[in-house]
Image (tube, rainbow, N blue to C red; front, side, top):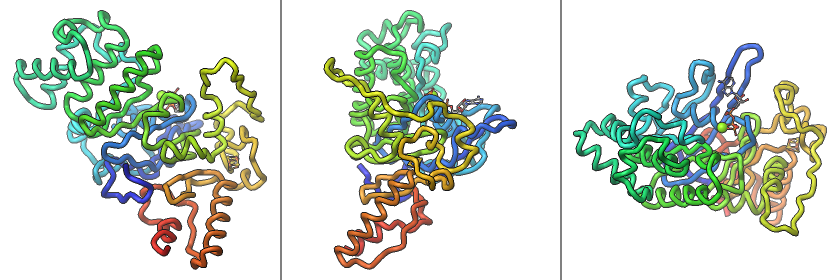
Length: 373
Ligand SMILES: Nc1ncnc2c1ncn2[C@@H]1O[C@H](COP(=O)(O)OP(=O)(O)OP(=O)(O)O)[C@@H](O)[C@H]1O
Ligand code: SF4
Ligand SMILES: [Mg+2]
């Protein structure tokens, strides 16, 4: 898997400073300056509480936010080309055949008056322009691939005759039928019970192994994606506040919000009683953004006076590509680097804590350091 020093050429998808907003008075900034990259074959987790902007971000990548919203700023680079410059016809080709998406409520995503077979076949025919008999064969093959036990019967069935887990498998089959390079899965198991949840997650892992499909896995639950993802990005109030390789994020969470999220993951041990987490305010709203400074400050037990004045940007704090948007954490990382430089006698390199993954215009102090030692 690519590490923190990946270049733009390694990336399948890269958003740069993506801003998406709704309404006019007041304007709701659902996604506010998100820079994120996904590499081929990578599973990237996007986590954050309800309303943090995960779905708006995912839909924006496919330019599907609808008339109510608008992409105000930024770039969405798909294999180096900006999707915001694509015409509608070209965009239709990208949707499905290059980037596919599955949603939270599988039954609601299928057309209730058409058979499963008709729906999968029409997707295949739309993208591959093949004969009906070929589309049928392909559909049955994909139903088998997603472990539907009786594909011929399911092919003739209507969505209401299938369980929630089956419907999600069918949607995954439809998404994969055109062999996309990226699958966006927005809370794909939220409406399913835990055993089916685990089966669908196993299926997604298998899909990555077999077809090399990269996956953007969206969830509000860090526990669900713990074993799935190579890297995880934590979203809060429209911004990425922490991003790291999964193991790093779980073993050394840096942002106070990530720590709260991790503490809220249930532990299946009757002797374990979660401690009440001190939160000065539970309410998050436009106020937190319009007041300036760090938008997590009203809920942060570690806030300092400086946090009210300066909005922290996502900055890189380790050679492994751990990024965080928190002033004290960035200061500690800078102090640590300074100490290492002094201990090793390595000359000081310029630091820019506004650095974000994939931004080639920044000076990355860790790259500078690793090249020198
Ligand atoms: N059509 C819309 N009109 C106005 N505001 C919207 C619209 N769609 C989303 N928003 C706002 O954008 C913000 C982000 O919403 P989004 O659906 O992306 O959250 P989410 O992180 O996916 O939450 P959840 O975990 O509940 O799915 C929210 O404040 C939401 O109210
Ligand atoms: S910048 Fe300050 S307020 Fe924001 S998360 Fe860090 S410590 Fe808390
Ligand atoms: Mg959502």
